[in-house]
Image (cartoon, rainbow over all chains, first blue to last red; front, top):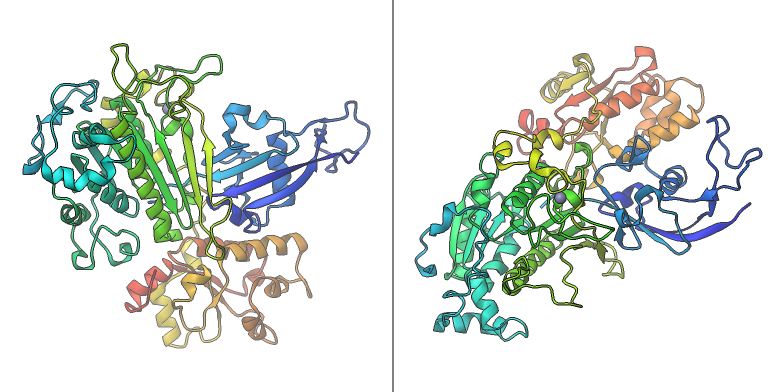
Length: 122
Length: 497
Ligand SMILES: [Zn+2]
């Protein structure tokens, strides 16, 4: 199954450096994903799954970005312990992700997801 | 009534922090006086702007603003705060003016290098507008003095440069109920947000049924600081003057409108100004975070400015949320609780090499002079821009990020050729040094230098991890303290930036 949804992902505040120095990425991401049941097979959609997968969430997207687009080995500048690292704001369609359910937000076609590193200099 | 023209330190220093002291709710004398001829001439062009008027100007004239930080944000902010005629302007900074400040800190002057920033900036502001009362606070803001510094003012501009201070200022502003205009900038990015405006008492106005009832504080928006290693400073990462300048000017713009329109006055039943008009979006309870991204190689583009809608005061906020009165108090802050420095220096896995894998800059220089390390490879891991200003003779530039990247790729793909550590040479080191590392040069020592001596240690560890030390036959050493130490110990004329 290769249903995909188009989204744009933006990086700001220096995070773009980790993603080929590009601020805006237009992507097609899988519309559904299946959770790895036993951490054994790394490939997606291996074997038979009972359900057809779940809608993709921000948590999935973060992992997806790391696996497919992170061009810098300093991934700890983006994720820590499997979550967005402290000091990064996530905005879903220009609004604080808290307004949308944070990591559990189900991504819709056409969404814009922005990751901003908060700044402290002056 | 306050006399603004005699430069006396004004009287309100010890007012109770919980009585709004902004002059707005006090509709007796200060706002009904007439303007002097001098004031009229000076402020006429902003008073005729629709929405300002004489009343707006009088509010500015009776307002007190504290600018914390007299740097790249504080200088431009202060110019417009002073120009607009804010009555009392306090400035906090413990540093002195340095030459490297002047490309962006435009309130200072070449002739004032070495003098305290607060007096330098006040000299500049007084020349621009002698009417306001300027109050110098030539010190750094600390948990001990923060409440005393902030209490006498109506509004605070956070123009500081580090996370610990930013959390401290926000916490004290929550406790003293001061609106906070916060901005930050590094390298080619800037951010701006108005917080705590109007300032609702700690723990009140919590969200209900998905609706926000109070404005957020800094912690509501930025719950946790970044790991120390990820928090870039302007000194380390650089800063473009117009970028930080724009953010500072925008801070002044927000402060002026808040004070002139009384946006910080909490709507109350007795008909005070600043009441939320129905249908009018003031963007206070859910403020907008303005983000500016600047490109050196492109004209201003459609995404140069972004306006992001933030959430309001959060139930879970440490400083202003549920139960916050029990954990955050002025007395506690003074006694060191919470510990801001520790909060902002989350452990980062920095490498510390044992002494035998390190050499001081002076010892390296001497050994070279004496010919004890004739042939070797010297890797400089600073950014290309830093390297371009000067380097140690014979050094080759492999920027730290590139080196890490190459090391990650190399360790994934394995060594090329004969399979020993030298198989990595061509994957990591630049072409110009590869030649001398073959045909007898397989065990040439490698020295690594960086800017201040941290990245180089990590680089040494990475190269060893790949086996490039050839089982110990090749020495890989870190030059302690980086090019900073080189300048201090070996070559005082070295252009360290
Ligand atoms: Zn808060």
